[in-house]
Image (cartoon, rainbow, N blue to C red):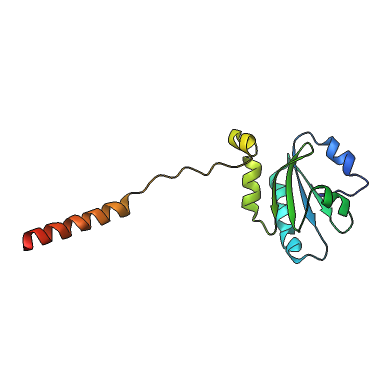
Length: 145
């Protein structure tokens, strides 16, 4: 499935026909980082057959870019209905975009607009070594005196 183009003529019909999450990439033909992102969007499109990926050339459709508040390209908007749920500006690894798509329905995200940081196990190994060394030195001083 190819990435579909959005322009001033088809914008309203495309956006109003979307029923779920979709992605819009904003780019310019003269933008080097945008060209670097092209394979990322191709992979994103291939990996997510249930999500439409669109592209807007900001030089040809500056009104659409202005409507989305695009201040720099490449700009990625992950949308639902007419709302931007999450966005990225600049070079963005596929993994980051995919993470947002995979977790877009997370309850915490939907309530706060932020993703919860994954909980990490506390590792007390370093603290245990320091306490052990302090105990050894304290015992050495006690028995040396």
